[in-house]
Image (cartoon, rainbow, N blue to C red; front, top):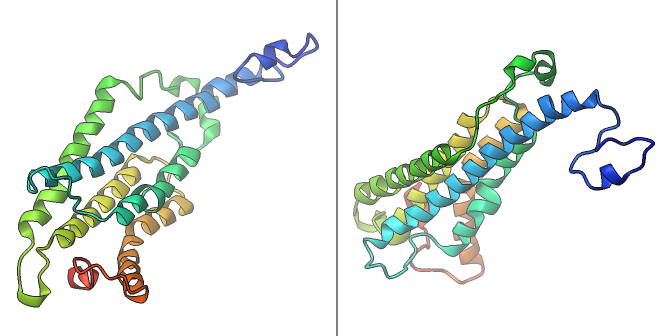
Length: 226
């Protein structure tokens, strides 16, 4: 809608409002292209990381008679989306750009991306990658963990935590790989997301001891794993 003397009906019924026709170029070449680019990657990545953690839980069901027993506790699973993997993709969706300088998009209209960043083939390719990444992060720890007396790490939650740490690192690395514009803030939160899981597990164990609600299957597990 054009905001002009003829009234505000066009503006009230439009998705975007501009004051002059000359602003249309920037709306399409800069804001339009960036919105499509960021949203396409946001959708693919959001499905990717959630399917990956769900499929990793599914793989374990083949080893527990499809009883529904999770290999990861519910609190840790809830933190997956809210704490460990949320911030990097949010920063990506707000700040990432296919070119270094936004003015380049206006100066060289020929670089406008006319290809479809998100379509059925690309979407399912990302989801197949989620199945593969989940398989690597689950089956290697499952078959590589060992029994060694009191320092055993072959238990249910030990394998689950190792798999969880591996997958959380993989999905964090994925958002770093799809980004084209690196900023100090983005790198800082990628590193934060990558390493915050380690002190979290220590605090998780300590909190159970302090609150005197220890879980025999998880007490001291973080120390043994790390």
